[in-house]
Length: 339
Image (tube, rainbow, N blue to C red; front, side, top):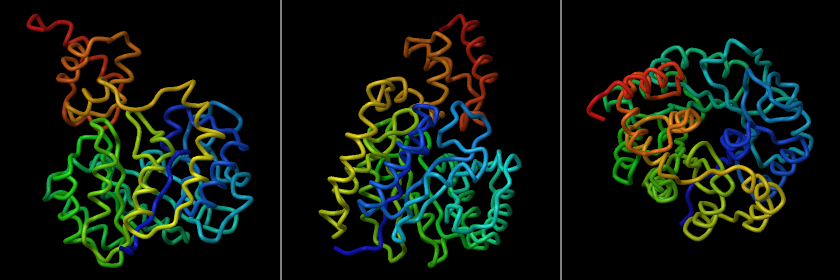
């Protein structure tokens, strides 16, 4: 079966949550070159971010820091960079050119979406391919998601994404969200899916997305060995092999495995990512997995206590970690005589 479907590898960006984005230039360049040579259509080189922990890392304060990673561009690969809408005012975004990535992925949460779409229009005017990432898409009601997509059509980005930030979706949930979006999304806009593996559904859900009957361009996010925040993402090697066998793609699996051997294996030996009971618990509470990480650092080791504390997180603060909210929830849980 031939179908217009692509992989976007986000190892450097989402995987950066695992190691504080501390991929030096040699490592980052090596990963990018192996992925582009493997036939991966989109490679995310990092994220614009305010804090910097090392001289060489893929959290960039300025576009000039990206240049060393783009010395061996491949015309068949599109290089992307993520920008979080809430941090947009901290950076000067130059016009798209030979010295920049071609694509910016703009990530936004539900309270920000109207302003984020306006900002996206400015990125398009600067010449960038724009992806719109609706973070924590499952928190939208059907009516809210339909309203968002209608306004996305007015912006006319290259792609719009369903993002399972908390790793809560099952197959039928994916199908439902895809149908809601696909019925309204303008025909010329590509459709993307970003999975997290909190309930070990990332690969299965991505297959459901790939199999959906549509003529539009589909894009699936993945990271080498699932490297990504919390429970991790879909594994690039899994989805590449699946698309080779079922959709006539020709990704070079050997080169993808080279990335693991040369760069990712040693990181995994130092840092852990993947399924855990803690990340299952945050998913079961429809809460950002970062709360699980933070509360563990605060000494919460029992799942019963983690679950109880998460019950005190107000719904409007579940989408992203707010340490003050987490601390207040801990205090309230500690005062609960019925716990």
